Amino acid sequence: MSDIFPKWTNRLPLKIAIGALVVAGTLTAGITYYLTPAYGRVGYQPIQPVPFSHEIHAGQLGIDCRYCHDAVEKSWFSNIPSATTCLNCHNQVLKDDSRLELIRDSAKTGKPVPWVQIHKVPDYVYFNHAVHVNRGVSCVECHGKVNHMDEVRQEKSFTMSFCLDCHRDPAQHIRHPKDVYNLDLEISPEEQKKMGTKFVHDWNVQSLQNCSACHR
Amino acid sequence: MMRYFLLFWLLLCVTVVAIAGFRGSTSRKPPIEIFPDMDRQPKLRPQTTFDFFPDNRSSRAQVPGTIAYTKGTKLGEQEVYPFQDHPFNTGRQAGSTNYVETLPVAVTEQLMARGQERYAITCLPCHGASGDGKGITTKFGMTIVANLHDQRIVRQTDGELFDIITHGKGLMGSYGDKIDVNDRWAIVSYVRALQLARLGAPEDVPADLRAKLPGLSAAPAQK
Image (tube, rainbow over all chains, first blue to last red; front, side, top):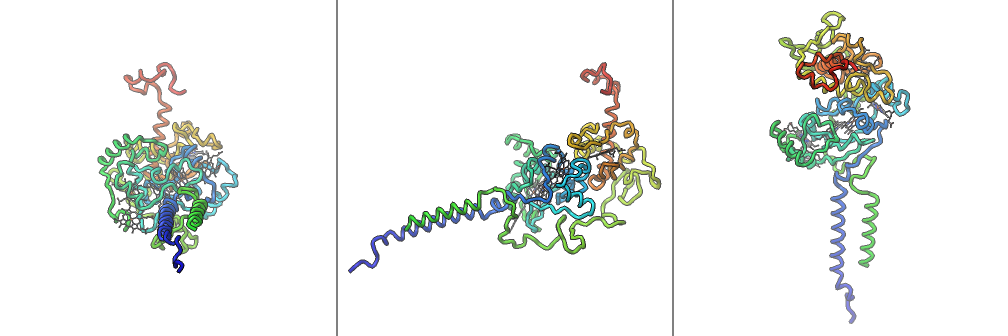
């Protein structure tokens, strides 16, 4: 009588086990790598209606962030500047440049420039710019070196753990308020520790982790 | 068979990585929100589109004839509100169009420091750090920028300077919507200090510090 199961089937369970392990392993790795905001959000760089460059304006010309984003230290919302802000300079510089057509139109008619918003947190998160920048948290902590970006691109994942990592240990991230808008400042870890600990103590900075700080 | 399966799986992985790329690679498309539970709620956010209003804007321009709800500013005993016809708000004497000669706020070291900071943010790109009208933008095609040390401007009253910041003048845009009233006066005080510094003579420096000025003992005050 011939065998019902040929000999090679002896190794079948082992093969299936190995196959399943490989599949499960790579799937898990793939999902943790790809299906997270670190992959999904970081690097988002939409095409803007006007080729505005932070590298030229904030980097080379050295214009302070608050010249344009003037509400950042007063309000939760950091405003995108109006077209008239651009025309302060561009009524003389590149006066008739076609790239600035939309800006001139907008200033004349009041029609908004359709800038594409890049950084977004969900609507159930109540973020606040003024609190952070007035407490010595620099733009660079959350937006990267915007002053060297031709086009703004999202640098951080903006997940809840991103916020909490800093809230748990603000001493690692805060600096003197006058350096908040100086995105190029390099601080050595020891210096940061010394300075951060001092500011946390002096200003009584809290380590906010209660849910209602960010969710209401 | 096992070998074929593993080969197939490897190829699949390579294809996925090839298409999806690595973390942090630039993407022109907005992030996908997989379970957008309550991520986007029908509430108002500033500077977005909102169909309720005819111009589809969520941020509203101020309705003419209205005043935003604000607190008053304490000037000594008096409390000044933005709607009042008061030199603090207008730079002009109450009930007339004449500019006030001097600042209606007390000039303190604090105000001066604030003015310096605000000047560096809003005025410096055009008028330069010293106010000589040679800011960085003048190297890129801003041809007409006023030199704040111009005799004509030095002689202007504080009220007029305030008015220029608030409403702009000639080719200069207005900064009234960008700079708070108090900060505008702070800038005026700082511009005055800049002008005074340029007009100063070595004799204005206290005698004990004068020796420290390099090469100034013989040279005239203005270079």
